[in-house]
Image 1 (tube, helix red, strand yellow):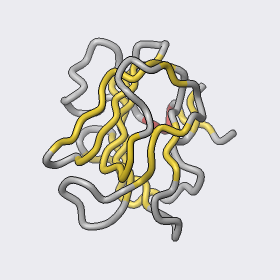
Image 2: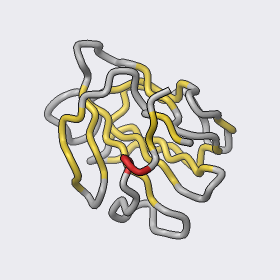
Image 3: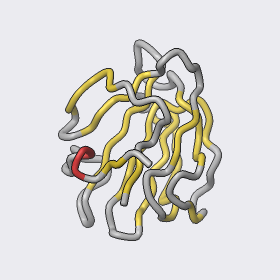
Length: 126
């Protein structure tokens, strides 16, 4: 099971880049961002558009992506569990406001391509 990557769910932009979503900050700057499921940090990087980004390869083969982060609290190769803090929401990269860009790419797909997994089919509130 996957959990939401934020404590305060406010979707500020619906589907874009395939099936990616943006979660806004609900009055809590730099709110914690959590791993949606158990897995291993595939990589972290700083992109021109996405800012500070984390990619996590989950046990089911899906890869979750967390973009525009203010801080990254994990390293490549590190194992993470569902609900573990992995960073904080930010406004890095090409953005107009603080938010989390979130997407899930299915096993075997290009993680830099369009998100092809509907997050609402996997995310649950715990």
